[in-house]
Image 1 (cartoon, rainbow, N blue to C red):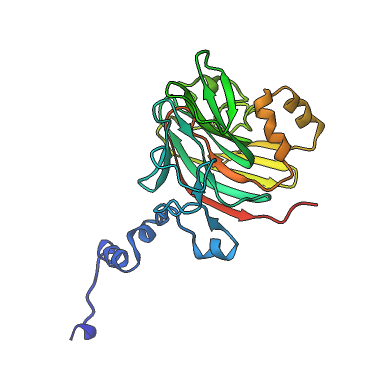
Image 2: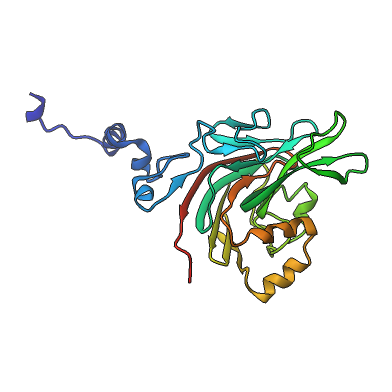
Length: 273
């Protein structure tokens, strides 16, 4: 009988058996690739998924409770958004958050420019005509020749192709910056088409941005330093300041080029005193 025999096995044979039993990733020492999933430890720690990789549940356009099909879609486990013709539509969560830690992964196409916004407090339909400057705002539907965008307003974690987009040349608008408020001293982003790991922490008046393992923004929005920087920001950007103390949606900007985002994981935090 086989159970009475002692058959010597080589290390490679043992590895194959172990791989069949428990998974090759565990044998190699590499973590099992889990996309858009929570581990049991994360669930116990209070993390939630904002995107399950398969459905559009929990996401909507700024002007309705419907998912903006055509402007956004699910692609290979990513939420993918792009400007369609002359039009762009931001995508935002149905749920609102105030104090939280958010992890996500992103990549952008060549020449692309986007952002992940948080503490979003309002949205507008913008109509750009002739000169390229916004001529009308509100809920007015644009004419057939107008450029139309549904914008959201909140603080923004910048995501940009730094090699080919003009925003990649300024510390205030490179990847990871608190857009036009707090800059990043040097680039930490990977080239267009490659995946970046990001983290945002919002707790009380403290805000952190992380990019590929490095904390690139650490600011207190109640500080004189932040107020001074905010006073220099464009008026449209300063609208975000009206919502700093409120719960707000999380939104992904559809601005220039295509953006892909996955593994959106969030846990609520007890606010700092």
